[in-house]
Image (cartoon, rainbow, N blue to C red; front, side, top):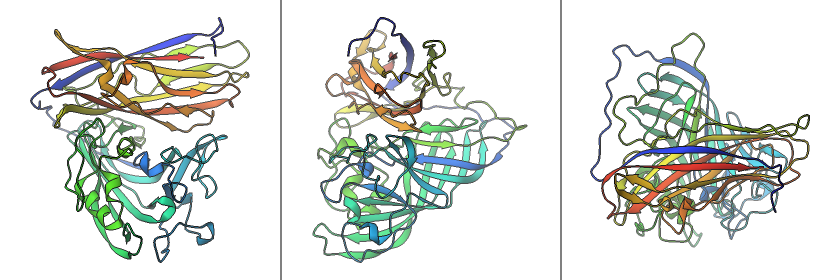
Length: 463
C-alpha cells in the first residue's frame, strides 16, 4: 500500500555498543560496602519458554501451555476437552495469548489459534506466554542481586498432549550479573512409538541459565542462555552448526529424555531448530516507596556490553482523532550482549532489545509498522555486516490487534541489514496498545578479527 503524503516516519537510532570478539573478557565491579536488600512481593514472571513450545503441530493441533497440573491420560494420546485437563488460569499461574480482541487468557478453543484467530499451521505461532504472579523475595539493585520464588504449576504439552510435563514452584536467583531459574519438574514418560507411559519421579532441575542480568528497580528482561550451549543428549546427537544451534540446561535436557521431548530442547539439525531457541524472559516487581532503589550495576568495567540509546518519537496524529505514540522501556539502560562465545563455526552472542510500546488511539485505525535495520559493526578498521544480527519479536499485552514480525536469523542471508518488521497493525484495527520484546542474536564467522565492535540499529515507525 502506498503511503499517503500526510504519513509521518519517526526513527529510533539504537547505538549498538561494545561486542568483544576473541579471548574472554572479564567484567569486574566492586560491591558497595553497605548493600541493603528490599523485600518485594507481587512479582510477575513472564516466559513463553520457546517458539516451539507454542507452535502449530502436525498431530494434535499444536504444542501448548496449560495452567496447573494436568491429570493422567493413562497413555500417549491427544487431549480432549472432556478430559478437563486444560486450564487458562489456576491459582497464580495463567496462560495469556494474543487474540483478535487483544491479549486474553487462553481457553481450550483458542489455545491452538494465532493472534488472528485462525488455526496455527505446523510451525506457526500461537503466541502464548506463561505468567507466574504473586512471587515474593528480596532484591538489591545496588548489589545486583535478587532471590524470588513463585507458587504454582505450568503444564507443557506437545502434539496436543501426547507428551506433557509440569513445571512447579520456580525459584529465581541472581548475583554478579548471572542468574538461574530452577523448578521441580514432573510428568509422564513416553516413547516414539507411543507404547510407553510411565509416571516420572519429580526432580529439581535448572530450567534456565541467565547471563548479563541487570537488576533494575522495576525488574529485568533477558534472553536465557541457549545459543552456543553444548549438551550431551541421552540419545541422539546435538547439531552444532548454523546460527540457531544450542540448548536449554543439561539437567533440563536430561529430564526431557524421560518425557520423550528431549530433542525439542536442543538443536538436533532439523527445520524446527530456529524455533527451539529460548524465548525472552521478564521479571517485574515494584520496590516499596521510601527505599533506596540503588544504581544500575555494571557501572564499572563494561567492555563487553551492547549499549542501546533510543530516543522516543511521537506522531501527534490528527487533532481530535487520537494519536499514535511509541515509547521504549528504560531508554538509557544498556542492552548487554556479553562476550561473544566461540563455536565450531562462529562467534555467537545474545541480548534483548528494550521493550517497545506502541499506542494508537486514532479513530480511523490506520495501519502502522515498526521496522528495524542494522548497519555495519566496526572496530577500528575491521568490520562485519549488520546481517550478523537477528531477532525474534514477541508481543505482550496486545489490545490493538498487532502482529509480531517474523524471526530474522542471525548470520543468515541479509539478517537485519535489510529492513525487517518488528511489529505491525492492519488498517481498521481496534484502538489500544501493544508492547514488543525482541530477543537479539549475533553470529559472525570464526575468522572475524578480534576487537570491540559497535554499530547502529535503527527502528522506524510508519503510520
